[in-house]
Image (cartoon, rainbow, N blue to C red; front, side):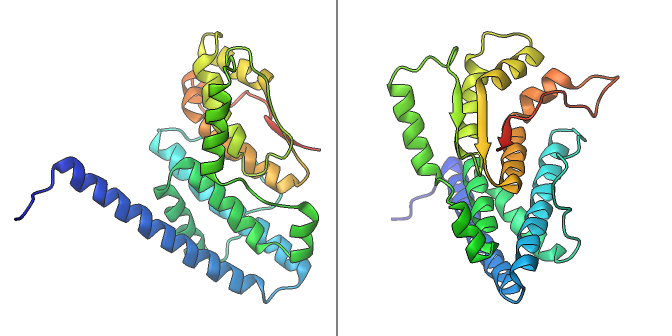
Length: 238
């Protein structure tokens, strides 16, 4: 017997296929980048890792802001985005765009650490928390009865912004501050990340910016200052 799928089931299947394809494309892109990195000296490999990740983050940022009618520039990176490998950069960024924000944040962190020289990676102890574990821990926090209206959140190793970007929307939703600008100030006062890797801290700040972009646009966009963001750094290197 032939069973006709509902439009909802068909759309869900398409989404699952798109996600599976994005995962494969990202994996292929990471393998290609790793193949390039293995031919480099340790110093050049570190620069390559940061420069290509800067480029991927810029594509992600520009795509997201454009979709929201916003032309704010991405935070200035410590390392300028590479102008080489544009095809690889866009393939990786486009794959990440298809995935959920937590998954994309985890994978760009994985991409970065996979390209680092082994000694640097080991020295940093770089390991980014997978989204399912973040989700479970956040669920446990909610079940503990934490009051998000007064909670203060500190992530002592915030690379990838997994916990910061998950906590920020909860702080926004529970904030007693109004209007939007004051909500951002409230979140800033109660959310802090610490990271020993300055480049990873920059990536975390951009990922956190993306998680707060909608409320920031509502709070800060005006006819006189359409390109300005006034909230301060939320994740700082030590």
